[in-house]
Length: 206
View 1 (cartoon, rainbow, N blue to C red):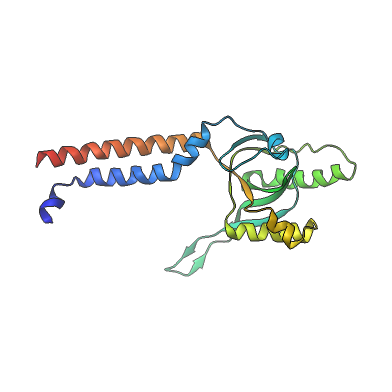
View 2: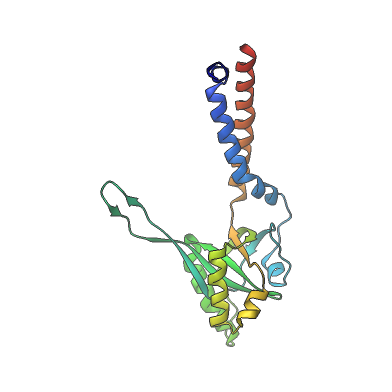
């Protein structure tokens, strides 16, 4: 066993493992990044499926149904940094029902304006003008988010429990920087291939 371990290049093994991790995290989104993007008009018309790439201006938004908070705990001192809202989840109605839309903290102020303007427009006011531009992918909601999503649909939009359940696994449109995703994927390939070459060279040397 010791002899076998001596034949393995440690740097090569680390590179392969790091490369595999980067590929695992970015491969699916990299494939999505090469798809022709759909617009939010397509989404509202019901033309959206898991794995779609979506880009453009969000035309309107309804209420938020969840907020993601982050904080840091220092275990040695027991101190905790204040909680920060890092992501907001909104309801977006479509021809086929409803989907969820995640908004990052950088766009939170405009998203709140868009919600107010959307309800004002439905009441006979002006068309929404708040700019919420998103590059995103369509994915399945986690079970935790899906439960909050259905609860919001029943409490605020008049859906019965059976109607909410009939929507199936809800779709979540979540922001993605596809440029960064491609960079991570390329780095993963380079690390995996380079590490594999180091492993092979050391193995042959023995």
